Length: 288
Image (cartoon, rainbow, N blue to C red):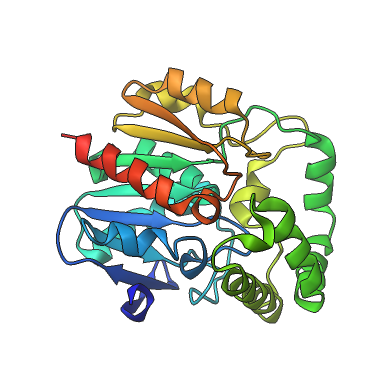
């Protein structure tokens, strides 16, 4: 089983759990999303399928899953250092990066700074591509209100029904999504772990990206120098990452492709895992 083979490492002074699957083929590193995501959650069907042709590495990002506890601010600059040290620790001179949401934003930032370590990039519903977000000032105020984000964690841990309603609303098939009860159990377990460790409901990468009037982190102007083959992916029904944002990213990136997956929202790996795997495999096999 994909998630039975793991190693616990120390990277950048903190604990990281690394899962392994697949014995042959080029190496891939999969990076999950924010909030209640974990490697075991969002990649549950994707990783085993890719392991048939690739050496797959997955991690629980810091302050997720088994990668706890962490101190300090884990912002974009941190993750650029973190991935560099992680690849060194894994003995991987170069790897293909596949990220979802937060993970896609982290992967894009790393590929911009360390293209020599990245053979290709798959960014699924990435964050970090906007100069300004809807309700910019209000979101910034919420993020900066003392204690509010930790109170959000307490609420999620205390009232799992709220997590269920959110999952049902954000998955295109709702409760009919394959593995729905297992997905729910993983999300509720993650909420309780966040509360137990005194963590905020949002990740530092998200919080530090926001300014009061515009985004402090906007990777779009940097994309013309992104020197790795890139596949931008979006679920057609994604309410968080607009089609216009990814079209701009595709236009700005020298060697890139753009794909939209029908019948999928933001968490494409839950909504359409098979379609995503086929798309990723086709792209990776086409990269020289």
